[in-house]
Length: 137
Image 1 (cartoon, one colour):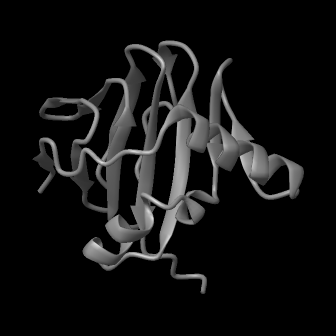
Image 2: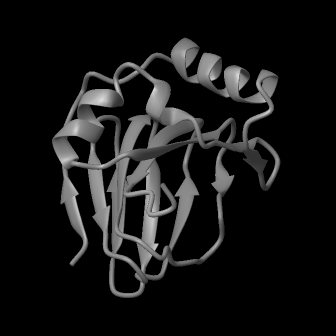
Image 3: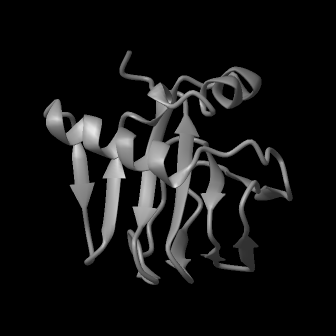
């Protein structure tokens, strides 16, 4: 079952911290993906100071940073092969599921069970942290 926790944690990283994480990933030749214009993903969000206690609280070990510099689509409609927690750290996004729509604001946390179809729409510049268990370790 999808679970939305409003204002889960408002101790969010600054835009400067998020962009430093993205820059670190790029300059160190780490995985950085980009989709539509202005949408970037770094697989190194576990390094962000404010993310570490969230990972510990949720008993997770993997975190990816998602940044939209402008409003628009993100990954398109898809599902993930593992349970995912998404912490909205800047701006607002709308999550579209088969049976409902959820609006995330800064500090909100969303739990998405594995294989749940969803699509995400950024309504403004936004950033979020996707967290899960990395089974490849």
